[in-house]
Length: 338
Image 1 (spheres, helix red, strand yellow):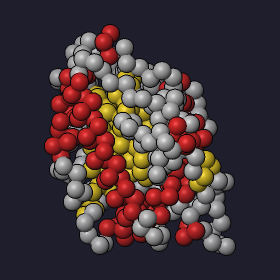
Image 2 (cartoon, helix red, strand yellow):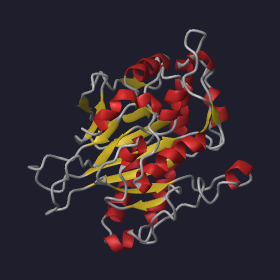
Image 3 (cartoon, helix red, strand yellow):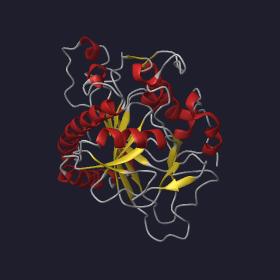
């Protein structure tokens, strides 16, 4: 068990305090007794196996229509996540397939207003119909788990358990399915090139399924990259930039990356992960939590609309143009270049 990423029993009354301690230290923890049926992720992984093994020209028929639409297929080298921190870096070595809520409530004016962007229709490949079925089932289960976790987070921050519900009624939730596979004969990575470049996540929390395969690394407080492999049956959870700002940096949004396997490794070196991003209502104004500021510790950040914060990060990585540097990263930005 990693002390940097402790295991939290989500069914325990001590979960809020354990989450608070973990989020102050590293911003990462693992949850067990989470109630998410693991057969749902297995079904999705099986469908993704079929999709990612389709010919490249078939997969390329399903791109997002624009960089600010977070659905569809992203090819190897199409993104460089270090740009989301304002740092230039080589393209990342992963493929991804993204989707959002399948049936958003279009009777809600805030949802209908973003139907062509935040709540754009999902892009499902006709060649793999089971991907839609498995994806929707897992997405709905992940939404329920995310709300359960944020309820514990609220209590850990000294707030009512339902505090975040007022900010997540039409959250810009996104599922990103990442596929890392080195094909035989592939060239070695460029200097500084990663499977997924160093970045922080952008929203409230991320709930991550990850294979128990080395590659994920977190930057600790000493400035050292530490490898993390989840415990069996556990989900990784981490604080996003929005929640770090919301908590006045009481909680940490930690730099993380996925490094390539050693060049001496034989075979395809497959690594899979499925990240559920719980990012909050696009029109929510985020300002310092009342339990995280005082006369001695005034708010560090001006109020920000959640969508403005999100798009600055999202578009930077996809357009490969440096986004505005995240203020709370500070001198850790040098580690992105290492």
